[in-house]
Image: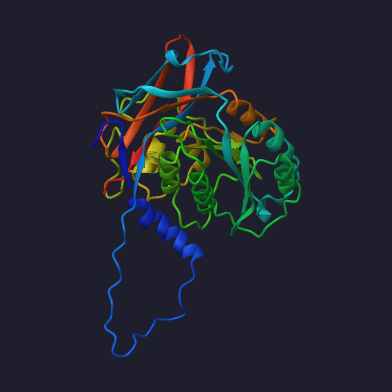
Length: 379
């Protein structure tokens, strides 16, 4: 394999995504098709393996000081980036200027109907604060079903109208299936090349942090988002005060590497972040991210939006206490336009498996938030 080129065989497109999308959107014949007399039965053609060559990995990087304030005066030479521990050369650097392509995914189920008036009023923030110049946006609604009510447009007034005319849907919240649809939409937008940055791909989810009945799994969605350089942000709609009673997060240092477990599981049970946390205390969010993309067929029930956002370099903002939906969207818009965008061509890292990304800055007392890595499936 030539240096600077990473071959990604996406058997996942013909396996997991084909299974979830084809089963959902395609129509099959009413019954078996009888063979015609005198015509030999023909075996179905083998499924083709789609291969995609990805030249660049793009990762957003949000840098804050010890007071939580965003830092806007860094230059490319201040950043260091590693892929699987191998230093990489940054080929593209920008601060909030690359054009945005983003999908706003909104839950409009009957469960969140009391909150929809606030959601309708937030369209003006999307069109004026989040989009900015040269951006394009699409609006997708979901409940038991998923509906694209506005395809990609640069017209902010059209996006605002899609919000103000938002109607309450039926019960149900197939969050993962709808996120998969949005990631697929973003995957078709111009991608970065060594000569052009392309568009920053962003998924903004406004929904409850739970899923019911999706065929897609969170790990599948997260893996595809990482490979497509999609950054996920979320605004959590809360019809209960369950978050207020949640246990505090574990801030203790972990002595085992990310994605591993320090102790064996209970006899006869598989080892997952959920049952490991039940035995030994809550695990780190990044452990859950890495576990999810490695085990795409398994379920992770807790904190799905937090896991999705942490796994792509975005942020989850819950709306309770003093934070409104409008405040959360305003904060996300401010971050998107104050965020560093770094691109590199992976070299010397190996082709398949999980790739851990590490980003640091050569200045003291600054904290970098970025995507932790991506997963490349084997043949």
